[in-house]
Image 1 (tube, helix red, strand yellow):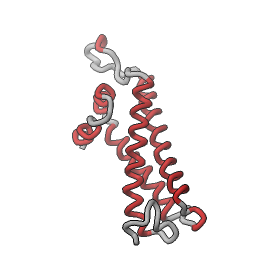
Image 2 (cartoon, one colour; image 1 turned 120 degrees about the horizontal axis):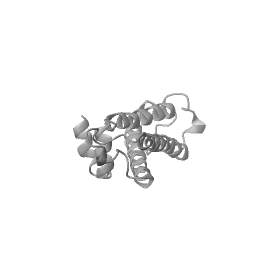
Image 3 (cartoon, helix red, strand yellow; image 1 turned 30 degrees about the vertical axis):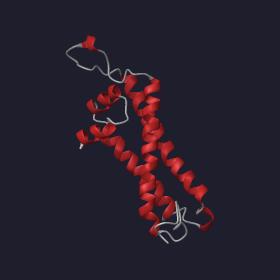
Image 4 (spheres, helix red, strand yellow; image 1 turned 90 degrees about the vertical axis):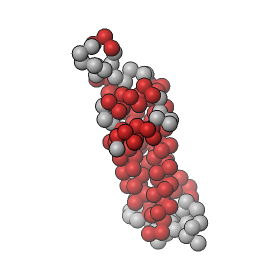
Length: 147
């Protein structure tokens, strides 16, 4: 699974950071974290505890999508930054080769933003499935295909 995720992330993630994430086996945990956060926030919006008439508008749905994206943005950024502070050697046999996660904070910000966008897409897909189980938010994010 790690290799298929590597091929997927290779489309939009900085290749140096992607190599470091792959070597530290962080691709699967971060991807499952994105799915889990999107699923948890969608469950809260569509099933319980936020499934109320007053909380079923499009603005509230966008707020929930933003919360899920922001949560994963922070998780990805903190994970990369903590790994950078650990100064893990690329090859323990060759200390002159440098350390993992040495790309800098701007690369970490761009990766965290890309993961936030991915979480928003996952939240949208889960919303399209879960909206049929909701009493009050059946028409969020859009009327089609529920009508």
